[in-house]
Length: 302
Image 1 (cartoon, rainbow, N blue to C red):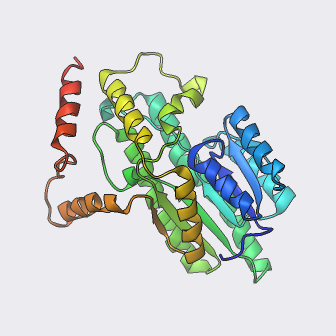
Image 2: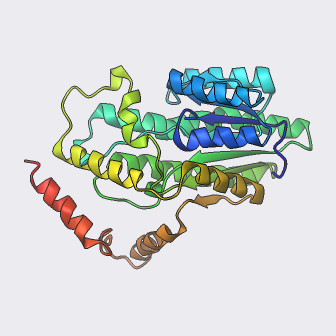
Image 3: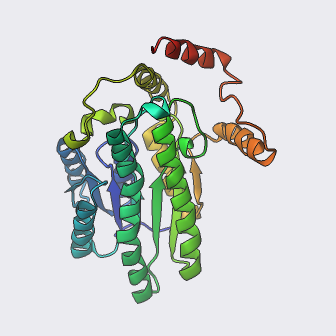
């Protein structure tokens, strides 16, 4: 896709971080923008900002894990703008800790938002896009799913998040291959950011009451929260820069989108482990002080 003016972008998780920058970039490019977010105040802020610059906006409060809410979003988008040209399945939450210490509620919450939110967006909007492509030879559309480098690597003490993001990478690769069987005018992409300053480390603020944990965080979960806060805050690539990388990838029809290409060295080590039948390598081999600090922090958990 080379031309964006007058076309439509749907963005979940548009109230903060990378999603907000997707919405801003789409608005600057002259697109109609449908920002969706679970936070009403953040949603109102981005919608007002876009409207003030003359963007045609359809804000929609949404919990991406709820299929009936995503269905209502799809109905509203079709009625107002027709099939969207860009779909950013971007809503996401984070949680850390030793993998056996996650509660059922945490599994349901993280998988519900990070994976099922993407699946709901795909199953409701892709058929709409294909229908539009059949009706109009000039129509083209792109689906961008936000995964993470955690969807390609497996950092310790981050199990539920890793699992959800690996599934998003798999879903996205399959979507790419399935679309290639039936069309060349609806394309898929997967975004794998590394540490980018966003609000994901404070995801608990949006956790539904019915999925709240009734017990305090474990030691490992407290350690994970502290490490994530520090890592995210220290990120040197901004959410705005990531959004620009994504729009460039859409223009170039590039499937894999990485915010930190230098992190791909760790991915090469993982793939070599698999291909050579080795046990998983120490993820902190290059920064042993981090591994020792994590082991020391977890040693006090009992």
